[in-house]
Image 1 (cartoon, helix red, strand yellow):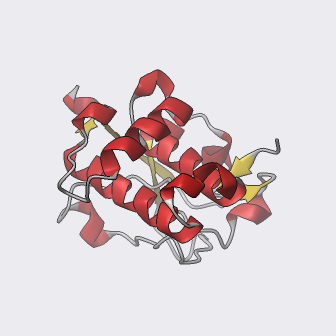
Image 2: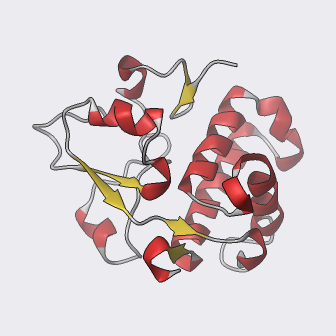
Length: 166
């Protein structure tokens, strides 16, 4: 299977440009850092270049990855956010709906190191939804599943613990 980055097959600097960065960015809690940062939506396109951005803020779970290196190669300074973690059994079923609990468990079984949800696991899941949609048909259409993954990101940011909180 080819290496994937931001949902694009064959990771390369060219593939990063023009892709959404929402799956890998680390944002502060609601009302803080997010109000001062550009937050591309999953359907947005963003080509970071030094004249357009002060920094790219990445979730700590991407430190040392090919994705982080590709983004560092854009010339925009990379800063690190402590990231958020959440055990699947800690997912709140009411915040974004009851589907979040089994979806978190599914994503953690397939993509999370040590079974703990974080931005990296969500990024791998989103790439899988795009690259292997047949593996997700029980959850709905590709658009529905990507929406669920985005909503699970909201749950992670709202209820997750930062690495400095552990």
